Image (cartoon, rainbow, N blue to C red; front, side):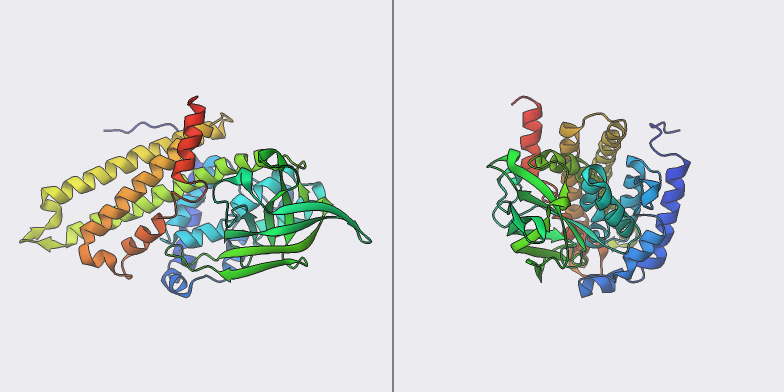
Length: 386
């Protein structure tokens, strides 16, 4: 039976998919297990990905970018995820959350300096919003930036800290949320802060149950003087920029969740063909067969919704409610499928040499990052008028 679906992907997406898949097979898969155990991957990988043109998708060609739409970004995330390491993908793609505010609202001088270096892979960009006492409550962030004048000019004097920052250890450019005004969302701004700025230090590389290959750090600002020219956008209007940025991040997390689920399902399908119990392949047992059917069905539904939301975002249609729904659906799906995959593998699923063990761990962050499941429900509720 011929399957008819909306034309989400054209020949340019297919060519990109093939290119990224070759890159992953050559540059990542042979090393990814070692990088996971080491807790990181070589910085050289950024240069290789930049040289391949993967970081420039959708950015202006004058900065080294290449034409691309929402689905090109989906393809890139999906194919990177085939390496089986969510942490590597999160770190490698940290520019996708650090760079967009600069591309949209940064000054021309800021764009000219930062974007070519990040798109080429020479420098690394990170986003710094979460604080030790704040979590998902962005409107209550405490990191404070006060305007001061010195003999060297006008600066923002920044004090505070951030935590759980992806690429926090080795990033070169940080897009940092600070409080420049009063309490609440109306007093939030974004600043570009460079590594090496006096008063800015990075803390320890945080040890996590998941995303081992991703460096995740604390950041500290102690009377850190940032030139006023490093303001991204309009002072006290950063909250709207952050919320807009979250929509793209949540769509990326949908793709990561769906691919986590797809990899786990494929591992389970292959294992069930090989493993025997009670004299026959375990896939012949109805209870296992039904598990696999339910896993495949949930994944199909999640991918369909993700692509539909992506298509509407690509068309410029507001998807605040829908992308929040899609993220919850996708992470619920990956929760279910990674759990069942480990259950099907039994004791083997707990062993580090099996991909499902890593997928199970890596999955856990997906319903937390980019706004927790509970925050998504709050957003959806507001959109429903509740």
